[in-house]
Length: 297
Image (cartoon, rainbow, N blue to C red; front, side, top):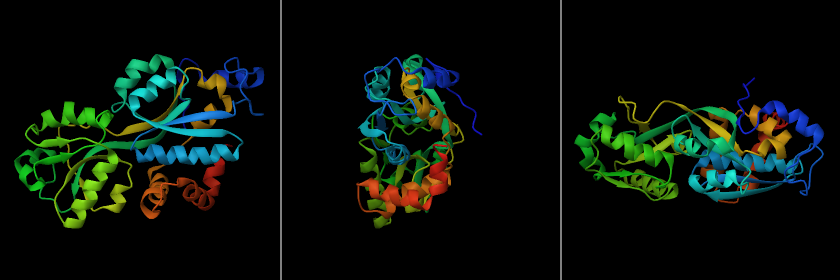
C-alpha cells in the first residue's frame, strides 16, 4: 500500500470528518453522495503525455462515478497559480524533487500533495540508437554530427530549466543551438530525423511513448545534471481535500507503474491516429478493467 503523503493546507486525516460533516467551501455547488463536488477541473500540462494519459484516464473513471469532469490544458506556471485560487482543482503531473521544485517552492504552501503515483520519472537527453556518442560528455565534441542542434520542448517547462541551467553548462554545450518550441515540435523533428536516418539529440523524459516508437538511447549523465529518478505527484489546491474528500483518498492511493502507463500512452499517442482520446481510453479501460475498478475502491 502506498504511504499517503498529503501535505500542505490539509492532512488526509481530516477526510473522513469532512465526508461526514459536509464541505464548507463551495457549499452551493452540486454534491455527489460521496461528499465530493460534482464538477471537477483537472489541469493538464501542455505536451506532457504521461500527464495527458493519466488525466484522460481519470476523466473516464470519474465520469463513470457521476462527476462532471473538465480537462484544461496550460503551462505549469498558470496551473500552479490557478490551483491556489481554485481556478483548477487538481493536476496529476508534478515531478519532484527536481523538475517542478521551483513551482512548489513558490506555491507549495497553498497546495496539497496527494502523493506520487509513479516513482520512475526521469529527465533525459536522448539520441538515435546508432548515434556516435553514448554520454553527454561526448556531445560537445561531436556536435557537428547532430547539426549542432539540441532540440528541446516548451520554454516554460521544468525540463527546459534543467537543460539550460544544469546540463548545458555542465557539459559545455553553449555552442550548440538549443531549440525550444513545444513537445509536438520536438517529436516532429524526431520523426523526420528517424525517417531520414539522421542523428538527432532531444530533451526527453521517461516514461514517454517515444521510447517504444523510435530507436533511442539515453546519453549517460556522469555529472548528474539531469537529477535522479523522480516521483510523479498529484497536487490539489489547498481546499481540494475539503471539496473532494473521496477523490482525495482515491488519488492518494493511486499507483500506475511504467509498463501500464506505457500501454495507455501507446494506445493514445502511437497506435491511434486521433486526438479524440475518449474512445481510445474506454477501449483501454475495457482491457484493464480490474486495475481501473481498483482505483475507486
